[in-house]
Length: 254
Image (cartoon, rainbow, N blue to C red; front, top):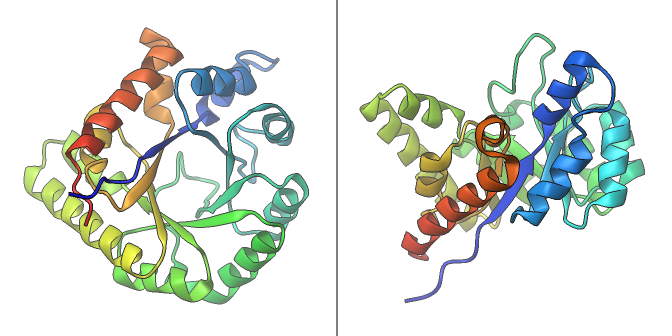
């Protein structure tokens, strides 16, 4: 039996900045959180520079890029401002996400199928700066096919609906959403895309989704920062890493 590829953990440190910004000042520092997460086993750091700067700010991104020893994944809207910032700072990766000012968090995937030309322009500009680009989309054939047409080498599957169904104890809905992710990950892999996943994942759902050998990276933030309040960030990251490794051990390469 072939061995499944390893699965990477990207830790999103946005909500460390949320706590800092609630009072102002410098504490807690997202850069320190990133360094702690890496020491505990994170393979990379994700930060979302929103247009309204509600948590991560420009200086955070610059310091992260200059100081961490692992890849930086910049979540961003596909706007001229954000593309210009990314091209200047040149993070390892950029994940294009939908963004609405009134939302609390990213509520759904990009409509890649309906925004092909705008996204193609952003993807091209980022790729020109040697930034690996991913599109944050639902696991739907039309969106996956659009990602291929746009020229993005990576997609990140939005797992929010599945995690919400699991958390609400809606077994049938959860099973249906997970099957949609399974089919989407397989379709994307056949199309030559690298597949990541994220949004709403906890220890149990991360372990389950890690059984899908096509998915090579999970990006997890809010849950880990929440757990860190009680157990500390190193313990939360190590526990997540262990859950993902258990799931991967169960995976069968297709």
